[in-house]
Length: 150
Image (cartoon, rainbow, N blue to C red; front, side, top):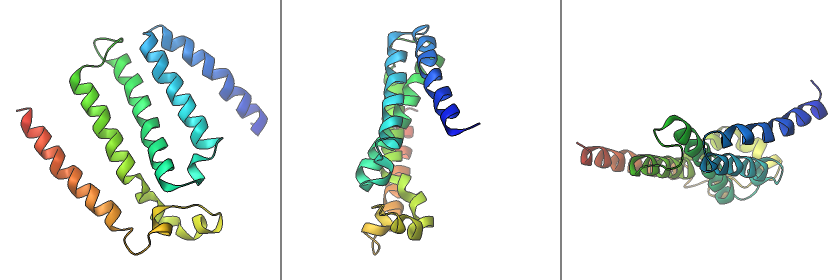
């Protein structure tokens, strides 16, 4: 498949997916639209190659929009998320936003060569702590949140 064919397929599938989303609810459609907008922002508008904060935020929001749509489809009410679902999506987005840059450590040379501004490049002396500290805090925080539900 050529690149033009892949792009045609991609953009043909988007409205089809949106139509399918409307079979569940308008809220599911909104989640699907958000996912497409965030994907375009990340890929075509180059959020992936800009500032690490923008990249992490767009990544986390993309995962959150996918999770909202999937939870609406799989849940008992396709029009509304309950408190547990909202908390779960928010926590997941927070984890992604604060730890997804862990994948940037393996390609510092390549990222530097193309001008990306990742945390390991921008903050080389403290970069490892930007993963260890959030992971520790999320682990402790989630243990606490889990104990509240018992």
